[in-house]
Image 1 (tube, rainbow, N blue to C red):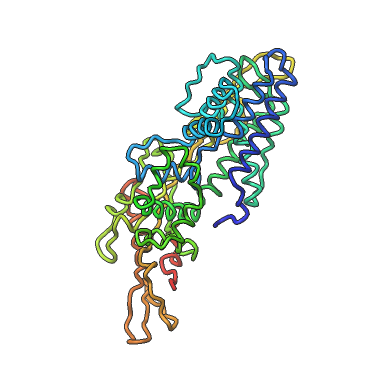
Image 2 (image 1 turned 120 degrees about the horizontal axis):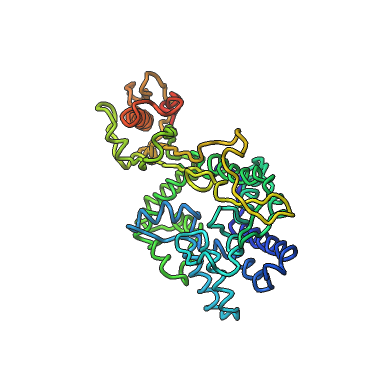
Length: 443
């Protein structure tokens, strides 16, 4: 909807991670195989982990588990990694695949390696193998290598990160994959490129507006279609994918009318109206709590349009390099040259002074949902707009009518600015909501 070239599927990404995982472990086997004891089973295990690591994703990927499920299941602790493990067992059992049980145990642990659900011990045999696909120690893994390059190309963006510089010179020291000290800037580019993609693509204001609309459509359809119940049974879960939107869109059931209307609005590009955003001040970020629609409502001054919580969508966006507020380079070990067997971390005072000293952004965005838009009846004659509040002059009876949609955008924008003043004592946004957004013509 925003980057039309980005139509590649997670299947393509999974094939890419499968290939990169195989190439990575094969390089380690070629150069250090004798000392590390890497065998054919290890290579197969890492490849399978790369192929299957994302098989548990639901419709619209992270949106499903981070935005939709928490709204319909209280205290939900479901994750796509846990579902990937269940799906692996289901595939093996239901298709009677003759595969080594110990190898599949390793595959599942590699899938969970970067999550809080991992049971991997620090002294596990060949511990370094578990950092190739999903690296829980420092975040450098082939999953990122693939999607950063793939998504940048699909969206028509430049990418100056070259993962080959890392895979060609990596070494295992002390059961951990280490990198040449001279390549620390390449490592930093990995995390910086990831952050750029999050800001430019994954959390683009229009992308988040459409996500809010999709979530609302799924939530409204959930009680009738039982979408959330699919996560309990792998034999049903595999049937759930992005086509759920087409199912809702074409179903005649009156129970799905509200969901259908939201999807129709997306098709017509009648999106939730982005009002504005602000970055949380650095000194307030550590104790930041997510802003809610209720917070915005409570900041509205009397007069004009009376807002309700269902009129507003708030997006709390966190963008970091890899480890929240921490410098990702702190937990990565390097080596000096190929003659050296010593690994070490690079302290802050030894790195380029041009690199950032803050590693996380918190951005709050607010949207007007404009519920009147769905039932807005277009006026046959072109309306005449005038005055601050965007009046519509009716040609039938020569009377003026306030444009409710435009008034709502204005009211949300003002409440949003009031919230900032109340919370921080200043307007944290760098610019006010443009007048053209407040007075946008709606037909």
